[in-house]
Length: 339
Image (cartoon, rainbow, N blue to C red; front, side, top):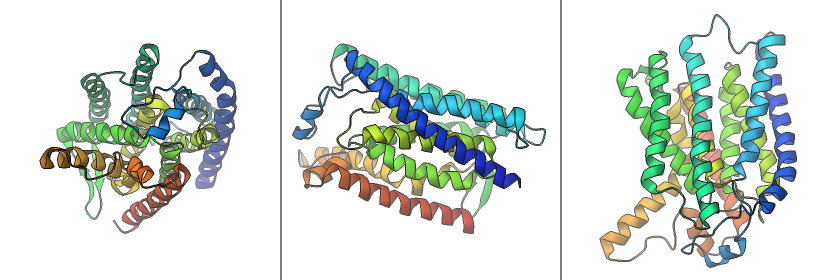
């Protein structure tokens, strides 16, 4: 009965988040136009992307707002009126710390992205925060989260075919490394209309299966899935709004919050196969360029631009990358079942 109630709450939360995100998009996109918060396209990107110049960016605030509003309401309703409670005497302090600290961590990454986007928009250049500033801010946000979880007694990680490992103090550097890596990977994935949102939606749907017994994390990932689906109404090619770093960094933070929350951050390796392929393509491109004195391993990096240069349409890239993500997620579920 409790499992059924949790499922109903998550489904309703996802649907409400979808409609709220879609409606917010309709209201906020004209506002972003009026404020002239248009994307500045990188000169080194594909030449045909220049026609996207001026498309409103910072659209991540659309689904972030929907996620925050619906998740707060859903958790409050559960706590006050329903048999399934977010906070109960049977839930350890470590679990609550991971829930609320993770929620705040995702917001923190969204703020970093917002600052980066705002600088780009105000200065009309596609630079934003310097790489050092952005990395330092990410390390601080991830470090505060990891420290809070460690102090709260939730510093354990599930390792496939081994079990749960109490990482102790090692949890802090491990968590920071994973979180910063994942958030930068989701950021790199946001380069084609609908790509980051679509791939992340697939990951969220599969993570929702694993959050059945965790009502708090179930609500977070369900509202994220619903809000991303609503955002895609406006973000599919041709995009009428971009999520910007505001959205892509928030997504990375939320995925880490949920996977660390259920003590299974390593699932992001198979489930986030596209994120890491995008990151690896950039690393390999730079390494090969330096090693060979100017030759390129890919036509362009990140990886989605390579396929664009090969003639793939944006919708095809989104469809193929989303399918690959689904396969990675199935592999992750298999690890959970047999490991």
